[in-house]
Structure formats: C-alpha cells, structure tokens
Image 1: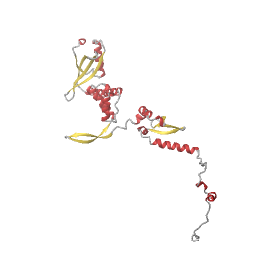
Image 2: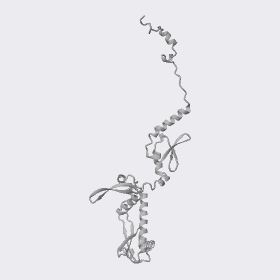
Image 3: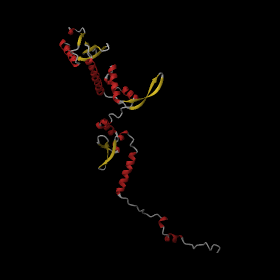
Image 4: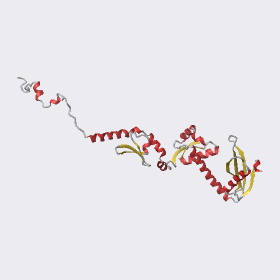
Length: 288
C-alpha cells in the first residue's frame, strides 16, 4: 500500500513484445530492404572519383603542355600546341607525352624565344671580393659560344656527344640543351659565314692592295693534301692585317693546273682578283 501512488500494473514480457509497434528494434528482420540508385548516377560518381584520384597524380611537367579531355567516352590527352590527341588513360603513362613534346614542331616554335633574356644571378670577383651580379641566359648565344670554342681550340665535333661534357654543361646551366654533332656543325658554318661577310666588307673598303700567300701541306694521319690561302694588307691606320681566306682539301694528283685553278677560284670568290699586289708560294715542285 505504501507504493500505491507510483505503482503501475504489471504487464507480462511476452505481451509487451507482441503489442509493441517497434518490433524491428528488438528483432532484426531476415531480409534488409535496399534503396535502388539510378545507374546513371553511379557511373557519374565513379567518373568523378576517378578524375579526383587521377588529379592527385598529375605532377609531371608534361601536364603544363597537355589537357585531359573525353572523346566519345574515351579519355584522351590533347596537345596544347598542335591539338593532336593522344592516349589519356592512366595505363598509358606519360612516356609517350614526353616523346611528343620533343618532336612537336608547334611547341618548338612557341618555345623558341621563351628562355631568352632570363635573368639569373652570377658570382663575379671584383677587386678581390666576390659579388653577385645580374645576368641573362640566352640559349642561342650559349650555342654560338660553344661553336666558337670548338673552332678556337680545335675540339672535335664529337665533344658534344661525350657524357662528361654533357654532365658538365648540365651542372653549369641545366636549361642549356647540348646540341648534337650535326647541329653544332651547322652553327660553326653559320659562324664562318658571318666572319666571311665581315672580312669581305673590310677588304672591299680597303683602298690598298692585298698580298696573297699559298701553302701546301699534307696531314700526317690522313695522307691528304690541303691548301691554305692567306691575305695580308695594311689598313687605314697603318696596321698589318691578315686573314686565312681558304683552307681546302686538294685531291691528288697535285698538278700545277689543279693548284692554280683552286687559287683563282679563291680570289674570285673573295672579289680581290683586281686588288692583288703579290702572290707568294711555297717551294713545292709543282709551283715551278
């Protein structure tokens, strides 16, 4: 009787289970219903997730020059310069993209003058003190200076293919691409044409006459004969000037007619045939 105010009628446990509307909270059903999701939404989500995963891997430098696109449901990569389509699946990797970058003509045209005048800091010794000075890097000028060094020191053209020289050049300036043998040969011929044009102008503007010397010699390692033609003149400031006009291979036999024809061709090529003062030859027997 003392708990009459708070007491509740006792209900059997079995009756509670049967009468409760939340039966599923006490007993899990044998089959769990699933919510159907449209197939299109699933494919779109997968594609989005794939793009996010692949996006985390786009760390190669090639992605500065290519754009990922989808063509007819297939992943492709488009070159930003020539618009060529390449394989864009993650299974393809990036090796074929690097190869395309090296042969893409439109990219070479677009990148031709991009590295010119790039400011860099160099160390320079001034009055025994080391200072930092601003300079600019020009790949065309670097290639020209390499050609001048080969000419000045009689280096073989194959020096540009030596591994040690390439490693040294890369350490000195990583942006400089060491040219191949054929490219540096063209650069040397370009330097020759520029020097020839400058010497021709000096010879044309000179009022005095020109003295010519010709010398024949044979290379000991090749057993081949060569002719060297040198011009001498006094300029307006009374300074003696000399230039090697031609250094040419002379096939055997070295007859007097062949030597004289080569010498005349040289004089006509430099347009000094009417400005000669003297011609001095060596004691070769065919010069008699």
